[in-house]
Length: 461
Image (cartoon, helix red, strand yellow):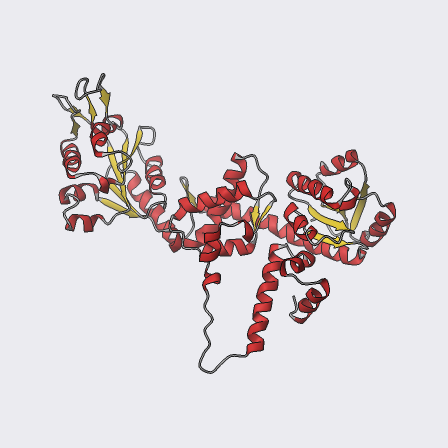
């Protein structure tokens, strides 16, 4: 925001010079307004780093208001930092929502009330300044809440970070426990990256990804002629991990025969290829992961007890995402930046109600599911703001708000007061979705402007 002695710079894009002069007079106490009526003038203003906002007359672009919507969307893509207000003389019921989706902060109908426009611009500029300050603060928080590729500042994740730091410098075997999708491989990588074997091989093998017939040769390697098709010798994953780290994901899926062979390798610190006659001394650190209850598998005879005690020297439990919902905004911000950059899309932000829905969803697929949802939102949403309608249906139907039951106590309720709560909830939801644009909110709710104004006054919104 500029010092109080200076004025904000606003571009007004219109072909109506009289309207421009009226708006300039109304805005003059706080804004320095510049007229742009040609393509070159618009381009020059868009490139001006000192510009604070744009007022776009939709009918001044092309033959109809929808042509102006396309220009608005392109300007928003180029300058996400600007306040953008659209004005129109069209009575199309679809226009408010189109303008909001294209990136307009507000939509005004002609004739424009200059003093109302000035007040709204000042209010929006203040909110935008806080928003960008908040994004900067969020980046600082994310930097402090990250650990070697892992993101999260919750108490549960801080315990994981402490465990990683405690074991990183040793050669002790580690079992990483947690549900599918929580990021067990990331934890394994963090152990390696902060340990003494950081510059040595890091070999990963998902034990559930291969059938038993192939797992043995993949893990232990084979000599030429060991079986049909073995035309040349091949080292196994254990050999490839020599001097480094071997990460076995889903170790609980190994059959008893392979469990016995792995135990022998850990006991003797040597490996013998299939078809081989000699063993090779090997030096590696073993990190394993599982989403199964290994203790229960030991009790049921499905996992060797002696192997369990060999690998379970230090257990690290990674919490499911539903138990660290406070980390969801940080993760979402990280994935938004990641996929906007990867897909060459302008920066996007979530409406507050979207964050609330994401925080209330149980995330059975954990961080992996959240990442997939954010990637989809980046690809499927056109504008700079992601709203609730962009979310997959299962998130909307599973959110806590949609599952609330109506419970009437024995003493009864104040029906009018309860109905007023519902009105407030719907109005607030519509206003959030349209970034405070009351005309667009009225359209979403199927209300005319007079009814909308009455309700907002009645409910102090």
